[in-house]
Image (cartoon, rainbow, N blue to C red; front, side, top):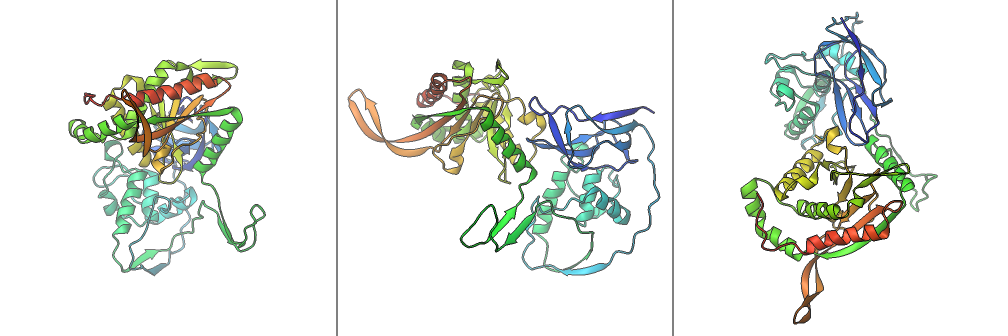
Length: 457
């Protein structure tokens, strides 16, 4: 039997390391090909690493919360090996108690579903672990089975859950979505549940009426909430960007009346013809991509004393997650799409971002970024550059305002749809002339939008 190392795989051009979140398989356990063995997280996205083939996990070379470099070994694995069964001491009987459920529906979110630690899962598995393979022949991963144990989901109930994974397998996201639906419809009754070992929360929350040394409030009351893992990574990424790039921001106000009227007139026809909802985002992205083609100097990155001029235009679109955190999926080769293609790409990435279904490739390789601050009703902003890129464009809210309209008969005042564009750029390599002319060109494309433009196929 061959013994190999499982390595931390490459997860995009800008991702060099990952944090170990959970070890999903015990040492000595048999696993099947493509079964998840470890959960990892980068500063962009969470994902799982599968087993390369059927075999046995011989040794973990990492621990939970370790930071591992791409290409480093994380486990030793025997291809086609047999599981090692270790004797287990009998557990003390588990007391059964009755918990009265409040008449109000349970409020459960993905952050409130408890995923047991490895040691707790071991104890629970010996009590009432669901089978690895159900009567239907469907395989259940250790992570899915541990969630089922923690939430009291029996084998029969587990078999009824629809799976979105390979060959209909139930994934972690399927379990969390199912639990959300199940608990929101729980009837008010006395439900017997078995007590489970206490599992510490990953969030530290303190409360005090004494003044905190870092903040002296008048009332003296405060709460201390530890940042979650993604927020810590975002904070570091933002600080590093400001310390790396001297930021300059140029602003332009654009009259987008023709674009707004065309979109309002054609959005229903667009939906009927292509099955895609036409928002303003792909229309704005189209103008940005055209302007990048005119000013390729903004489609670059910095590597020491070298400027890397990118041939392809890979447009990042910053998206806010339900958790309040931020992620930047990338439209690869955005200049190769027509409006229909851009709309499909924007909608797909936005939908998967909200559902937490983006993979490492979806957020890698961006060469320029746009962020829509208008979504929150903001008229402008000073965005921070997404390193190692050299520019980012903030799109403000579109508002009706009185504006001067120039006509052959003279100037007049009219109600127009106006928006601000805010272009932040790295002054090491992008001077004011390039940075200012680029954002002005974006505005020109938006202002000259053809009101009689046909819907593209």
